[in-house]
Amino acid sequence: MSNASAALIIPNDISSMVREVETAYSGYLQKHRIPDDHLIRVNYSGGKDSTATLAIAHHLFGDKVRAVMADTDNEHEYTIDFASKIHEQIGCQPVEIVKKTYSQQDFDKRRASLQKNWPKRQAIRMGAYRGIIMPSLAATDTKFADAWRKSAQRWGIDAASPLEAALSVLHPSGNSFLDAALLHGKFPMLRDRFCTDELKIQVAFDQAIAPLLNDGEVVVQWSGVRGDESSKRAAYNRFEGDRRDPDFLYNFLPIHKWTATDVFALHKYFGIKPNPLYLEGAARVGCMNCVLCNKEEISQTAARYPEHIEKHRQWEQKVRLVSRWVHWMSVGTFSPAWMKQFSLPLGRSVQLYGKTPDVQNIDWSAFYGTRGGMGAPSVDDVVEWAKTGRGGKVYDLVKASLDTEVCSSRYGLCE
Image (cartoon, rainbow, N blue to C red; front, side):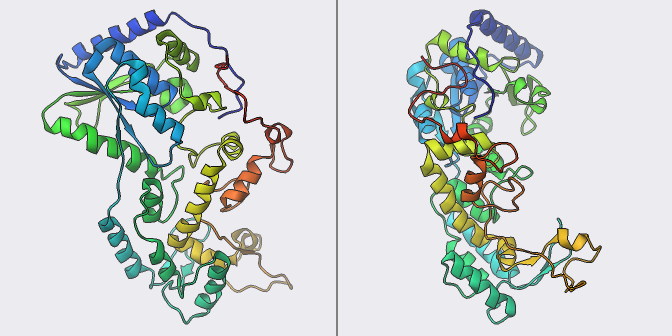
């Protein structure tokens, strides 16, 4: 969901664009000496681009094509339903939906790690607090433990120590996204997108691709990646061997040079109704919400699908208990910014000219990360920020008056 103005769908010569895909693909097969009996697997998400890719692949190659979707357990129910029924519109085989499942053994391993390491004092290795020693999170008779129990009371947690609180939630929840966050001790972030790696890429490979490769098949993965989405994607090669098995596994980007207008024109050309989320303000379809989504997406979700906001609120309450950082910061520590203005080492007990150091408190392992200048805001804090305009101080009247009962497609899809 972006601030981009809606674009009218003007059908291009889709038939010629599909022929270009067919011609280009044939050339790649010859160049790389890929056998005619190779298999095609479409990486499917339920979004416009992967739907267009699946439609093209099936149109050209029929039942040679199968689609695979990795359900992160943080998807909108519309998307899962759409993916489970898209074969009825396209005429292809049903999409294979796979999911990562974390076992009790995974959690037992993580519990053993906490029991081994949290009783120790530990130095912070990076960031503004680098070099500071965090106290034992297992001790119950220290000043820190006494102070932490006040945090636990704020959270509604009855535990003698942070370690005890963490172990109380370190059990399989039945939700893959939440389980991944519990095991990592945090939510995914820009530089650590373990959700993509573990819940999408790896699970699709392990469950749908690797068995084919083990049987000696040659597989070409078709993905709906478009270059105009980002400079990084624009630099992708349209066809290349996959590093995981470069002689038997290949990647093809059939619509790499297409625009969103082209994609929806293809939907119209084949008579495919798009994911209904596109009729409710969505600019893209994926996790609901992605931890990296923008302000507009958050405000739209809060207005249209408050149950997903509540879901993330509940996840935060559990994930904070497995974050060593949150336990330590919940008690409060000196603000690095305050210390730096006097060029004093962080962690030193300071009383300078009658000034008391600013203390930072963090109560959350924030689902949405740092937003609006807030260090680790809760879901509720981020939702309120998302309702504001540029600068985050004044409420946006357009967002406040959002009518959730009418079509609001950003791609001109409303009838």
